[in-house]
Image (cartoon, rainbow, N blue to C red; front, side, top):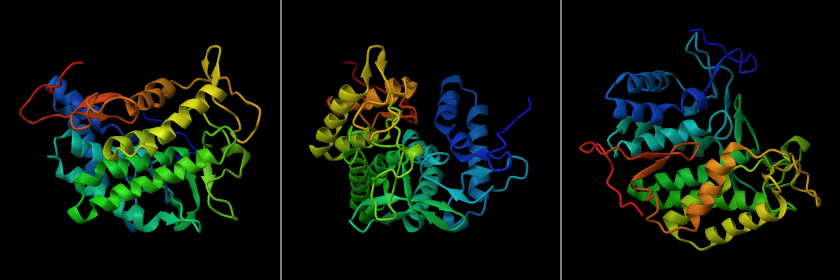
Length: 322
């Protein structure tokens, strides 16, 4: 019954992506069990966040659980923040578009992200920077690449005059993340890449050059394929498949790489669990027909596990089993 947080997390603060990424699972648990307590817990978290004053409309990555106030003003759509935003959109979709609060919080957050974090490089690449105490760090993490798919998935829910805008924004993020892959030797992207000092979409620090079989880029390809059917997304996905086969496949499975810019393979000898749960699943879906797990019936949680859209008057989602 005692909560403990890591001291590095802004003086023992809780992390936005952790306490903000329980919503779908707890709502579904209340739906399955008939017990409202799980939904009440996550709605209470949302109420606290909704009522807090947000710097420039942005959600910092840390919240002190004792004071209920933000920790240091660090904002990221990548690590520490990412799935909170994703879950606002998906809570609206999973509720069969009845959860209006989730929809409003999502589009308000996206508007703040677009105003304060999204920038275009001198050569025309759109990227999402990080915000630290009012200053931008022109770095984009591999984790942030999921946002292209998120913007595209939310496009239909936007005001009519913004639908094309968000689809285009998703496409631009997908292109930038593809460039981060294309500019490496192995054609798989680094953990983070920068847009400063004359470089674009390239990792400049040794501790950001690794690839650990992450799914976010192919996740965005999957959503962009499903929503636009532009063949380039299948082409880019197949490039990733070939790169995984050529540079990551080993006798026991698939290994991450220590440096994606090296000509010789630098295995880290780890196959992360999300490689099977997410990376391979999203690649499989890109080359499957749209009626396999259609997006109108199914939500993918942040680890790509399936949750059904909860129709208000139906206990089960009716889908044709293949």
